[in-house]
Image 1 (cartoon, rainbow, N blue to C red):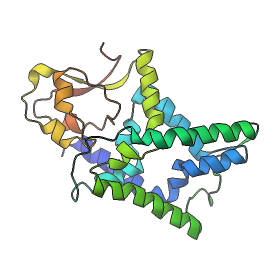
Image 2 (image 1 turned 120 degrees about the vertical axis):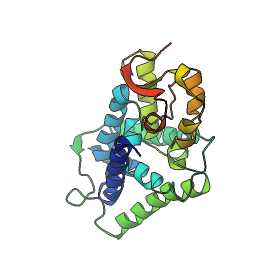
Image 3 (image 1 turned 90 degrees about the vertical axis):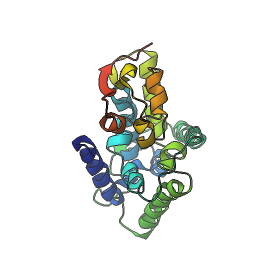
Image 4 (image 1 turned 90 degrees about the horizontal axis):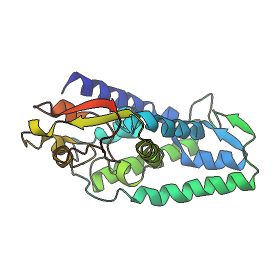
Length: 243
């Protein structure tokens, strides 16, 4: 494993270890509860920042920072089945959830205050038994799909954060803004299949290389394909998407 991937996995594992303290800041339920009181809470602010970050960094958060990533990739040694379909399922969760937030905000007359640490205990998420139970339920939602459906199934099927970043990168592509991307040199490819086999998001990376079309809404810019390629076919680039 190259140093960059060791660093990445160290970061996402550390993030996972901190997840019990931080999961309220990633909670869709906390946004709904806070919205009912006209409050902009920590998860509202974080999700907004994830959307804005996608304009420049795509879904790099998913590959480099997300605690759910650390949890799921830690399971790869036990379950490496590829996920080949179901990427649209998460929208069936995200659309009604966001719709509920909008409706509650309208009914309540908008937001009147900001409380980043809403419902936390001195900034920490788990301060009582209900919070612990909520954390364990969320952890089960992350772990169980990975064993049943394949690696990083939660990212594909259930994640309520991913759509914010997917929309952000769609907007960046629409306006042709320069941003962090993958680029490839197809002529250097030796068809070893390493990139596709090792992709944590089960993407057809080799096909993407041959088509010289590296943009994919499920790509998390983790760099696994870059660091695993023996021919240095794929690189990071900060540029406008090729037409």
